[in-house]
Image (tube, rainbow, N blue to C red; front, side, top):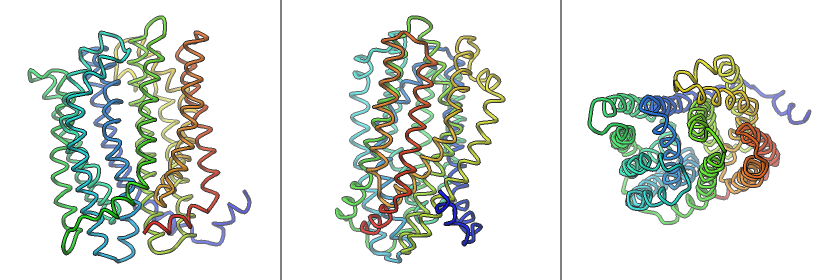
Length: 449
């Protein structure tokens, strides 16, 4: 550990802080916009009914499974494009960008069709309370209709931040956020769509955002635009572990919903509480993922310049900034938990369980931030398989089995699930940090371009 600390004693830490923060703060704001959209969705769903709020919480987990391919492709895109951008090879850069966009469009079309036709039947087959299925099916159908545009929006944001144009991505997401929130209120309360307007607002806003990003990305490319299967193969090789990880992560969230559905009483209220708690917690999660994405860009750009040691140190500095900010947010949430929850629900059981969830989950948040942000640096170097295995292990070998044992076999309450989630976060952070300290991933990252 002493040797680790000394890595920064002889360097100008200010330069590392400046580089990391210049990329991080626009991405944090983008994550704030994402949070505001989700918070508004939960608020409006809660105003309609607790059943709609619980149904929305389940549907949004299913929806994110459908966009994992976009996220995985974007991880691969950022790792490759960030290095090509600083390497100065404009021909290969254009090929990589065009190939990534074309792949995103193709995957978006396939998933849109699949989501519209197959997700309703999936919901009918799942063991969730019957009173939630009636609302969940029309919601997922409308969400699925916007998948193609969401794919293009996500991919475009990844390309822009890789090419040091993150502020343009910020402008796009500011507009998407504003439009989504305004349409949320208008479509739900002033049109026949009712609660369906929550999903319709998302589909409409991502459509506009995708068009804006296409205009921005077009300006980055120069010369003829050729599709490169070699570039796509590299992106897929880097991105598929993250895609699989996100599927496993979202499935784990759905399994937790099903485990909590086995509780003998207040199951709908507890599911609504988990939905509200997760949305509040996303105020912390999303900035963390902003730092995660920033770390991928910082590490990728530096590796493109063949600055391996600087890449390693910058990753640590970015994680340190993130943990400091997250710790401050944790304190704020703990001190204001009940007031925040009361904003999202008026049901006393939902409020009580949501507050309990927040008090317990906040314990592990700084550790979660450390692990996820360092994982972004590993992803920027293309070392995504190690991230996948470590996170998947902590969730599927620790979190899910412990939750099942506590609730289904031993008959404990929901708090046992919240503590199982905490323990898996501690383990995940430790395993990723241990991998990061092993600098072998730096050399492996140089082989990708």
